[in-house]
Amino acid sequence: MCTKIFIALLATAIAMPSCEFMVASKTEKANFTLNGHWNLDSITPGKDTSSLFPALMLFAATDSMNKLNMQLHFKDDTIVAIMPGEHSDTILIKNDTTNKSIAVRDEPAEIFYYRPISSSIMQIIYSDSTILHLSRNK
Image 1 (cartoon, rainbow, N blue to C red):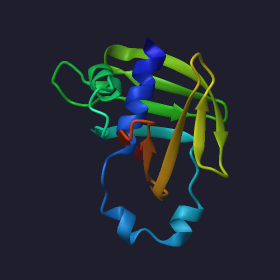
Image 2 (spheres, rainbow, N blue to C red):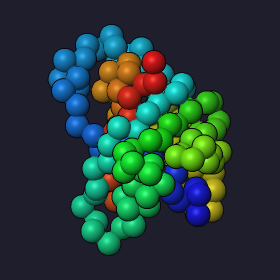
Image 3 (cartoon, rainbow, N blue to C red):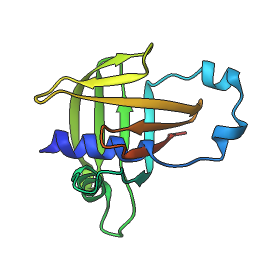
Image 4 (cartoon, rainbow, N blue to C red):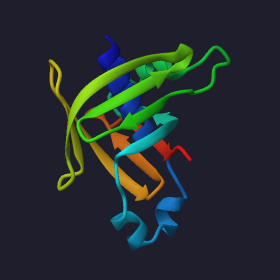
């Protein structure tokens, strides 16, 4: 259950539109690294209205003040999701930098794609086209 919520949150963060996409230099995008601490800024639901992923992500990432409050800590082979109330979940992943994809090593296996906008902003896209918008934690 926690893994599905995390996956939902991850996909939501990818969806956030950003003005930096248009102004980010090619150098910034070339210097992009997935590893690090990221904040979930927003969730854009996908086209599949029957998907529960956006709702699960919002539920897991929303604090008692109805604000998104989730951090994702990416490492080489894991993602640690820190949710409101100091709950956390660790997910084993395989990062494919060539295809810009993250394979979740869980049953059922899921693949997410990420889109670097700049060195400090990225989107994670779920299979239902839900987008998670993330910014690097400073």
